Image (cartoon, rainbow over all chains, first blue to last red; front, side, top):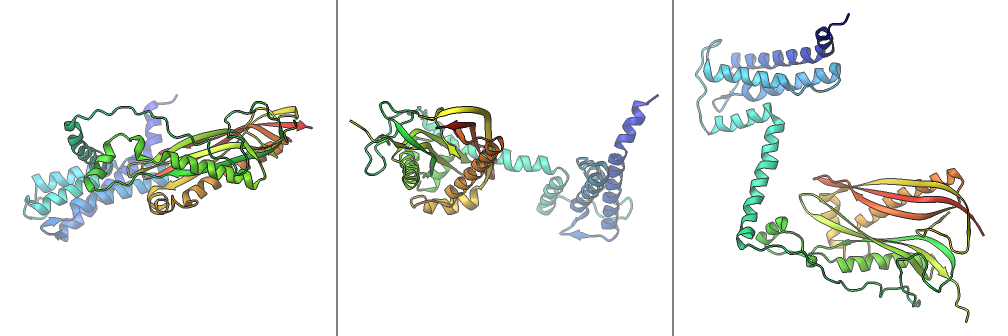
Length: 277
Length: 108
């Protein structure tokens, strides 16, 4: 016979012990802070330090014994208990003044919440605040009512580049008509980073973050020509006189801070058979 | 080892197909460090640090593909495709370079 509840207790016992020890460590440190009156700018440091100590102790034990983190539950418990004590029942253990509101205490409350709920506060700071900021910058563009249209334009042909002294064009097919390939040389590649157009002015730079990209913003043609040129140079060094099956690929890399586009060209370098008439 | 992107070898006979061989390499890009400090000023020049890194990642992927083909006993890889995938990330980006081909044996 197995009792599911006992099993659960057995499995979770280290997690519970970790939370318990964390809470005791947090409250113990809070008690030390109160007894020794560790006050900075009229604010007892226990509000910040104790949840941190509780969370640290709990995570340390949980990692060692339970195998994974328990999510700093004791930090939360400590946070609630010391705030109930500090705001509602001040001076039960040691007579002291209740906490009063001031700029310092407000900042300290912020720090305290950050210590107790790090993930939530970081989310608010880095996602919600930044998101609102970006929306606000986007507002002028919305008011101007510019709808973005999808651009499509024929960019200049880049197959005009070829190996010097050879008039065979580059092809993207495996076997150009009417030509015999004498020998395959192998894979040749080339790549280039597409340079972004320089943007002047702070406002334009901010606006750039939220506006869709335009074709002119990137020096795509230059990058593609550079990639093909590099590929051809490799082919020439290897002694080839043509490149077949040329594929051009674009990869975009970038995150919040900026982006770059890499253009790559891949092909098979070949030596054609001499034309016999 | 002959490596081609074309599906056939002109003038040669393929005697045996060994199946797909692949190789991967990851390239970690730190946007702050590599891309926008180093690359910007050298893009106009010959090669940038970033392009060199990409080349070395591709070579690494190719090497592991070739090693796999050699283990099978092939002497050529046909239909080779190189794919560059962005694996994302906000602080830096990781690019995966994948090389896939078909290992074959050919004779004159």
